[in-house]
Image (cartoon, rainbow, N blue to C red):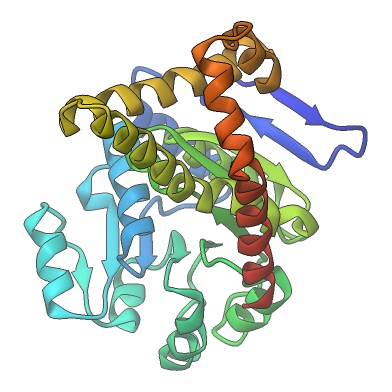
Length: 310
């Protein structure tokens, strides 16, 4: 299914929920590529770090591509060996070589933002001239900068910014997307479709991209910390660590599912659990006493500012 929900009166965001997988995802993906004018359905990644790994694992697991449809350029022989050990053959330690052989389809710019300048300096002048779509997953690099960088390498068709998160690797990702004004809607829809295969996707205006990316991209680390802390509380009370972690993780997953599926505000759901003079409200008092809500808010704010300062 595909559901579009306009968020707030300013209509700054569109949420696209995961679609139900079709019987032949690979054929469907190729059809969508053709509709977008993309004649090569290869997905080429410049950078093979954790986020590339999350996307690649998610795409392959969803069935839209197989290992032969993926090409990856990494910085070291050791990293190349790790990818090849996983069954991927199109792995290179030279960006230009990878682009020459596999760069005619969709190219993902997946290096760390601080390595962007050196990466582009190493690329040949026309290294992106055959590329039909460029997607950046680099935090903090705006569309204007990306357009200038890619234009210098022979690509002038506009750029899509996509910020997935690490949970894409298990099919439960939350991605944020925006695009240059000259990118055809069919190409934007194609990237949205890719993101849907590994979770949900939120389309925003670029002015909201940094804060949305902080919530989605940095959020998992904050939630992992929360799960770890809840489990520590269980261990303090005598639970085995494995039991405490399982309970904390499952509880977090269930709570998130209730927020997404019930339509209720999380504050209302919290109130439903807090019985008068009960155990939960006493625990909530401690969370408020130690400023937990404020800490989460400030964490998102700090991550947003850091992204804008990159």
